[in-house]
Image 1 (cartoon, rainbow, N blue to C red):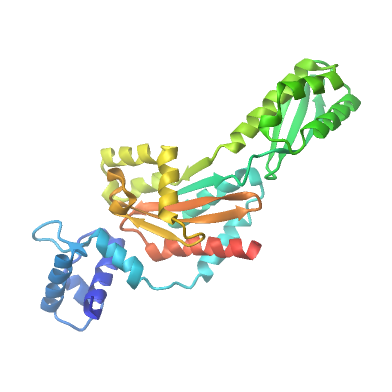
Image 2: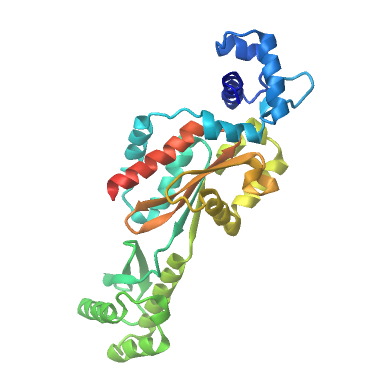
Length: 337
């Protein structure tokens, strides 16, 4: 493609991203300073349409970008942005995240707010989660607190009603016994034989032990599943191209399907490691998402938390801004390594 066609395609895309209205030759001539006549711009637009980079939704209207036009723009015409603003934003927002249990949700919320689109985060495990440490603490006369520290540094706590009354010394002793036999063990090793062995060592509280075993198994099962977090869904409702109820319903149905979402993120990133992948329209392979773009990358969010993160919005999205947000997140990740 020659330089003039590139300039006009770039102008059409930038204008359409901003206004969500078909772009006329007169608009390009008045706003983008190409120093050519409106007739010349019309001729170049006709050529771009023939090449499949833009399309004319109505006979009397201007042109709008086609998916192949967005692809050409992303691959060849995007301007590299200075990341300082995005890095400062990421630093400011992530510095307020202190609870590792909510880290992924907070990252998703942060990016959804910064991008004004929908953000999908998946957590992927390096291996099976285990109990790193546990502790029992007496609270009131009829309750105890079970604190579980997992191998990923996540902390889970449960209030348990006393099924058999124990002293503080007995709770400490039971904590030591449980740590001795359960530390660093995967869920598959929490067998009936092991449970009975622990009950034999500490026979005072079989009902309390059974409840503790149930809570440990519940915690490990929850953490060993891939977690999918979606935030900013309502941002889609604000966009003029998604004011149809059916289109919104199909989008909601798609992003609520964990298998589809994890597959979309995996395909968008491919085998490029921490490079940022961009899938536009029909490249996503789903009819219900043909009007959407997904920008995604692998990410190590913090120690022990690895996964994928994606920003999904209309094909008419601010590509530079959203790619820059993910680049800033990756840069922060590199600095933390």
